[in-house]
Image (cartoon, rainbow, N blue to C red; front, side):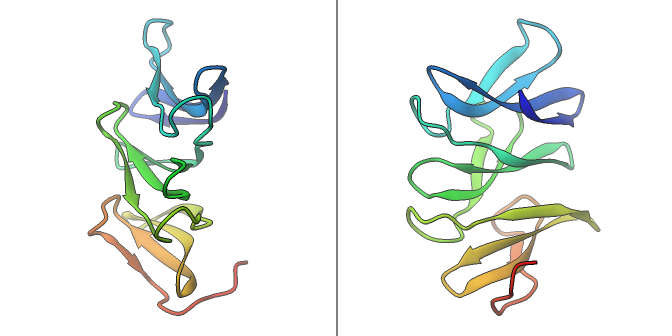
Length: 140
């Protein structure tokens, strides 16, 4: 297990198995309560969840579904409640997202879209995701 993150008393983490590759798992501390959340990148290919962060009782993270590249995702710990927040760089290209942390009820992160790398904020929804700096910036 890697990227261990507590959300509401459940532990989220990235782990690899031969069937799913590296995917997002959740545990309540029991064997019966330890499960794959969702096979985001179907099959043995990995979505490689990264940047896991607890935000208002949900997990936000970066993953690659094999279709949209590396993008911002959220999860409530269920398969149906695990979904992409936004595809910043349309198509299979990755947005090279770097999550920095929670500040004033939003998550600050950098992501690259067609116009360049920008500083963004999100409340965990597509509608609540916007660029703070609208022009491309140099990553630090």
